[in-house]
Amino acid sequence: MSWGSWGDFFAMGGYALYVWGSYAVTLGLMVAEVVLLVLRKRNILEHLGRMRGAARRVAL
Amino acid sequence: MNVNWFKYSSPQTFFPLAGALAPWFLSAALLLGAVGLYLGFFVAPTDAQQGEAYRIIFIHVPAAWMSMFLYVVMAFWAGVGLVLNTRLSGMMASAVAPTGALFSFIALWTGSLRGKPTWGTWWVWDARLTSELILLFLYFGFMALQAAIDDPRRADKAGAVLALVGVINVPIIYFSVQWWNTLHQGASVSLKSAPTMAATMFAGMIVMALGFWMYSIAAALLRVRCIILERERHADWVAQYVRTLK
Image (cartoon, rainbow over all chains, first blue to last red; front, side):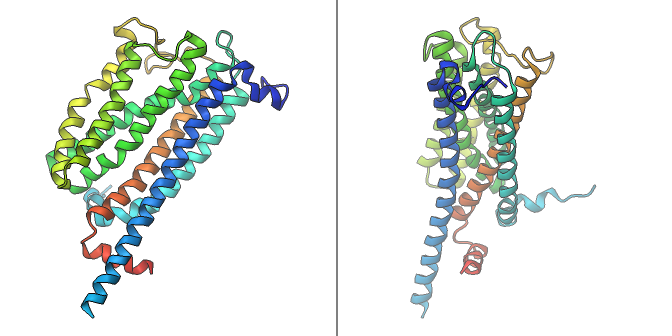
């Protein structure tokens, strides 16, 4: 292991901006993609549920 | 083995299968990601020349691989849809595109953050960088073209032609470091020879690549479920599915 302490680890030998800038953006985008997909599906189902409710009211 | 591969070629049968598989692929991605990051940050040694800045490769290289691989997968499904006229194929192509674009962007972003400390510049019009940027624009072009056409079947066909023509860019990216002797370094990993890096670095990169692969499958499956619901919303089975949720 190349780290003496957590401080060393976060400093990344002086390249903290580049290393953590890469990892933070990558992780953020991947999490965001999954969250957006879950929300997209939820929205579609809500929309379809409303449509069904409306269709039933018209039928009655 | 006698498997009916066409059983799952209809959106109706693939929808529950995709829903059942997605959490497994997502879990595999999380597990591989955790192991890969551990290898990359705590096992792999400091690079003698580049110091700690090299640790960006554990996401940079896998993201670049996935961006090219996903383009081929997208073009494959687009081509199958064009030839066999199967609905699900076009939906798969559309489902892969945004994740491919995401990995192209990550490859460019992390490459830029690696270029600054190692080359002294965020960006150059190097052959590898330029062809990867073109890949990102091909994904955007595919998505924009599909979004611009109202009829999904026609959007699939137009997108498929664009996707198939754009495949030519993938070998250009891959061989760019050999064909043009510009700034980006050559491949450290190839199928023909042993990797020119420490075994633990190589292991970290491969595990991260597998993690990104599993993630891509999970994201594509989640997205294809959305696309199926959107396109098949008038079908009876969707109405039944919505009813079971209440």
